[in-house]
Amino acid sequence: MGLRETIKAGARTAFNVLGDIKESVTYKAHNAGVYDRTTGKQSESWTNYSIEAIFDGFNEVEVNPTSDIRFGDLKVMFLNVNVFTPKSSDVVVRDGNDYEVIGVQTDPAKAVWILQARKK
Image 1 (cartoon, rainbow, N blue to C red):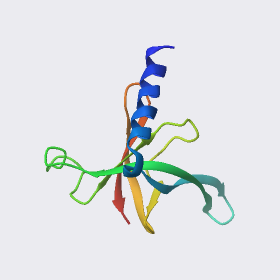
Image 2 (tube, rainbow, N blue to C red):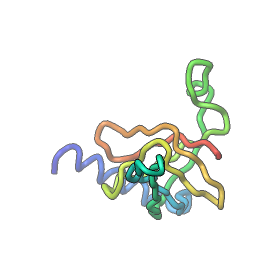
Image 3 (cartoon, one colour):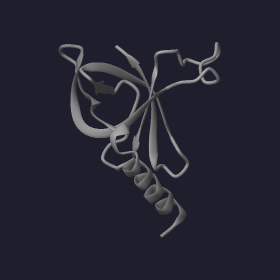
Image 4 (cartoon, one colour):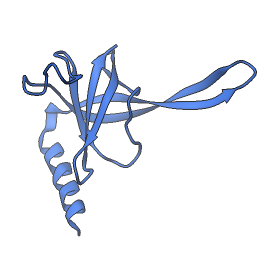
């Protein structure tokens, strides 16, 4: 097992240990469709995924005048399960509220996704 696989296994173990801290939420991946020349519109669709995520806020160091992070933005963390790749404009649905993904990061081993999400 290589280092990347070891880190991913450690992340899975950490998420399992967290138990009830994780929340089951819906991740809505935005799929840009085909451009229709006759109507001038682009079709779009959404693919829903059920994920377990951990939510947190951003601290004072992360929220500063030069960043696009605001108080009230959510930090959403979940395991990279290689089913989809998160991107800006996707949506996380938590407790019936939609949060638009506006920032996407991962760790160097690509074990965990870390998103910045803002209530729509």
